[in-house]
Amino acid sequence: MASQPAVVLLGARQVGKTTLARRVAAAHPEAVFLDLEVGADRARLSNPELYFARHRDKLVVLDEVQAMPDLFAALRPEIDADRRPGRFLLLGSASRALLRQSAESLAGRVAYLELTPLLLAEVGPEELDRLWLRGGFPLSFTAANDGQSMQWRQDLVQTYLARDLPQLGVTIPAETLRRFWLMVAHVHGQLFNASQLGLALGGISHTTVGRYLDLLVDAMLLRRLEPVLPNVGKRLTKSSKVYVRDCGLLHALLGIPNMDALLGHPAAGWSWEGFVLEQIIAAAPPLSTCGFYRTAAGAELDCVVEWKGQRVAFEIKLSSAPKPTRGFWTACEDLGVARAYVVGPVAERYPLSESVEVIRPQDVGGVFG
Image 1 (spheres, rainbow, N blue to C red):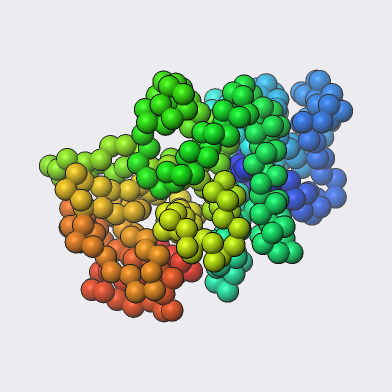
Image 2 (image 1 turned 90 degrees about the horizontal axis):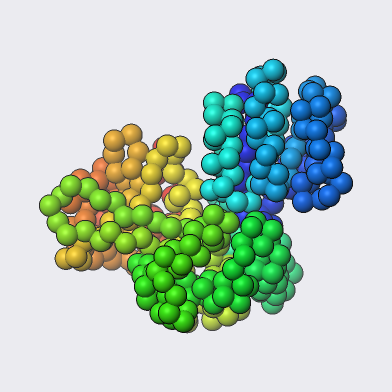
């Protein structure tokens, strides 16, 4: 906000965008805060050009801005009339549509930030188990006990299906979307096969399954991880991998109530992979790209971060003594990675070779310098 006239803060519903924005607004005594899902606040913007001109000297916060997409066209001339930084803070829960609308109207006038669920770097390594089990939605993480946290997450899933996704323009029946979300939870971290899921959903087309996936990715509930496709002369996996972004929601969908159940569940390793992956992506430098690498011969890396012409590789293992497979070493050689890390719940970090180190999840942020 110190350098751009407008900032777009993206994040899933209930992740804390409004709370953060109200704290920012509290530091600006004259700030104006409008929730665009409230009819009275939308009515104030019936003539947005006039409203913005009258409040030109104030911070204007617009919550759930995707509810009034036409506003972006009105914001452009207003910002051009006064390009002082920190004039508008826009909050949105639908990433792709919001990015497209704002990019078309506000190119060069706006900065984008994503508010993720709570991260290990924010809550501290002593809270690792609780964060992994409950996920990073603030009210889930801070619940009095695991039972209350689980109930909150199950209620959140229902609220998303019954209210929040329809408000974002989703017209798919809630029960259909629930079944799809649950099926994705069962293949969390694995290669996404739209045709297989379509058959399981009653024979719908892979195109329709892809549309369902796009909707939940757009709502920042699922993550689509694309393969790294270097020219290495090998048969490469070209399918995406899909994750439930918040591990707490994953566990709610799978009915995993506590740590004992999680550690004994067949999905524990996949869950751990998704949990660590979110820490890596959040810590990755701006303008970096994240993907995975897999060949038909079995060479594989769970995450590859490409940054400044270099590749940093990660293998994620739910083991107190993780041992990378031959496929890991082959993949590192294929890609010519600068450094590689094996991330596991170990007591302390230690080297495996000159360029490969075993680290803990809390060490991820430091590997990028």
